[in-house]
Amino acid sequence: MQEDLDLDLPPIATPLHELDHPLVSRAQQQADVAPTEKIASIDDVVLLKCKPGGSRWRGAVWEDQGQAFGWLVAAGQRTAGARDDFYRQLSDRCTRKRTALNRAGEDLEPGKRTYSKHLLPHSDDQLRLKAEQAYRLLQDARESVPQLVKEARGSAGRPVRIEVFGTAVEAVVYTVVGSFDELYLGLRVVGSAPEDVHHLILQLAVPEALADDWEPIEAPHRPGESGEIFYYTLLEVPRLRG
Image (cartoon, rainbow, N blue to C red; front, side):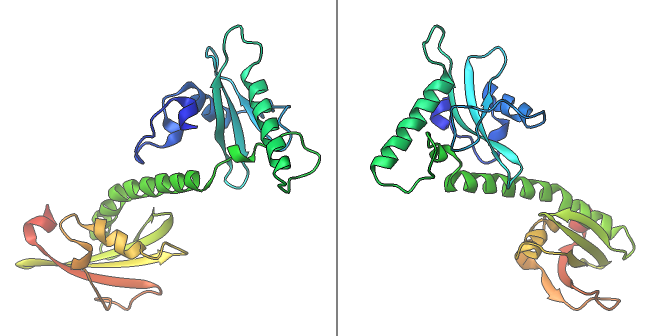
């Protein structure tokens, strides 16, 4: 697809569905409207036509029912005056692919004329998607976790809840003021969560403290809640009160 669209692969910070390309934009729009015209000449997989208005670009979209969104799996340009359009060419390629696989003795679904499964997302595509999702969760956490600690510090020992890294987390904060300020942070994960969610939160909780600066301790001032873990660190007073 990268070669089909004549685009360089962007860094993880730029999701592929946000690329500035008429086919990508059109595929995004189609996801929010009524069912789109199928490519009738492709009979082994349901592929949908993607035709941006005012553009010669043409594409094929496969809807991933398991993930509830579509993948742009083939792209090309309609050539003015050409005998065959993009969808005829795509069908011919998939027909030739099936013929080659039949000759090689591959066990294929009977009764079909085309083979287009090689166009569908593969492991590298799924890895890219997971990396984009992880990056987005991390960026959201960079904003939400310090805000969580700030709100918890002002809540007089009452828990404050947010969603971070795809799971609900409650936090409660106690401080003891002195030449150094003692900061006690209690975390309780509600439901399932990534294995290292506490470590990730501690990395982001207070910019001046590293994850290794925190030590797990018993809950101060009150019994710990079920599933709650308290951590303790020392911070210089100007940093904590900034």
